[in-house]
Amino acid sequence: MLKTLLDAFALISTWEVIIAMFAASVYGLVIGSLPGLSATMATALLVPVTFYLSPIAAIATIVAASSMAIFSGDIPGALLRIPGTPASAAYADEAYAMTRKGQAELALGAGVWFSAVGGIAGVLSLMILAPPLAEIALSFSTFEYFWLALLGLMCATLVARSSPVKAIAGMFIGLLVACIGIENPGGVPRFTFGLTDLFGGIEPIPALVGVFAVAQVMRAMLTPEPPPLPRRKFGSILAGQWRLTKLYRWQMTRGNIVGIIIGVLPGAGADMAAWVSYAMSKRFSKEPEKFGTGHVEGLVEAGASNNASIASGWVPSLLFGIPGDTIAAIAIGVLYMKGLNPGPTLFTEKASSMYAIYLMFIIANIMMIPLGIAMIRVAAYILLAPRSAIMPVIMLCCAVGSFAIGNNMFGVVTVATFGVIGYVMETNGYPVAAMVLGIVMGTMVEQAFVTSLIKSDGSILPFFERPIAAILAAMAIGALLWPVMVWIWRKVKQPQAAAATSR
Image (cartoon, rainbow, N blue to C red):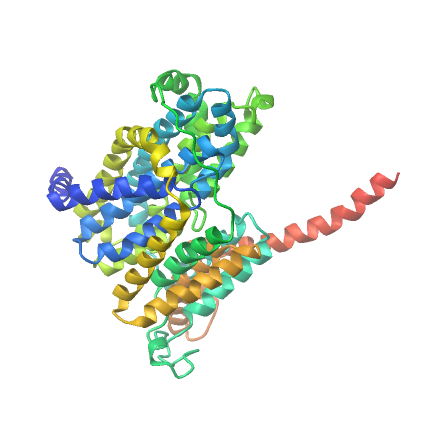
């Protein structure tokens, strides 16, 4: 283990990795602090850059940029009441209320401090959970992988903030996209319409860039420009944070645990962790009446939770190739591109690379404190940048990056098409995250299912005979039936509630 750790230090001690981490950190802070530009979009735009980096440096950029962007979304939320990322939306009103009370430093300081603490807690969970799970995963067959992939798809519908029916519809759209091409067990062209460009299928990365980056630009161009940020000098950012750590240590711990659990669930992500933790903080608080008036307790718990989910979201990604969130979905694409194929053997054959990822997460969260403070102080200048100057640059990056993926114009068309699809879906309340999961995991579900049927000679009994497969099957079927049971329950309760009211 000591030798592996020393090898990991050697991997991340190169100038390429150090410069890549620093540059990606600054980039993530800037993108996250711009209202409406998500951490996922920041990560997706980095993918073309990773083509030219070594595997460790490429992963370092993803780790650093995503961690920083999740935190820096708190900055415009606190100063303008405009969340920079979806994860910041949960407590933007609370942070803005603190700013109105003259406590902007306390609100932003809590954001950077507890985000860093939560991020390190998430790394520890990754280090503790991943190795034993990898040993269990080595005994998995295609039967277990099928149910695991199906469970991941179902989890996306369980945690969706929109209608579960719409989440399932979005997931099926993604599965339909995953069917395109000839990369299927039968090797038969499907939905190619005679276009040779579609024979290779739709790559997940252009689809991700389209639905998150291009769709966001389209939304931004159709909404009013946010008000300009008034210039303001800040005092000490970290003053009082140690007192808050001691005062709200249980809330911080609870936020870390909730973030780790939600991060491990495929499809959940940092924004869901932040919403759940803020709701729990209000539910179990001794002073719930203070929430919404500028009370720091919710910021402590939600801030710790969203960054804890970032690292723990890599657990299913590294073990099974199942993304814990959309950022992890992008990371999986980069891992495959760099020859670090996700799976349990990754922890045995390339253990030093795994330890390097652990160390990069720890370093990124330590760097967050000084760089985050610096970002808060220059936020006034960054937030003054007009939308008309930012959006064309983002579109240019999307076009250049999509062209570089396949070195042809088809990538650009793919990004543009999925930008329109993403915009239409979100406008009508269909979660694009569910579609992305369908695209990323569709091939895995189909191949595991078909391979299992071949092994069992067409019998479905082996899908339920193995103990782990039976447990995963019960969980997946339960997740599938949950929206139906909720719908039936509401239909039964509505007449009863109406009858009670009439009395």
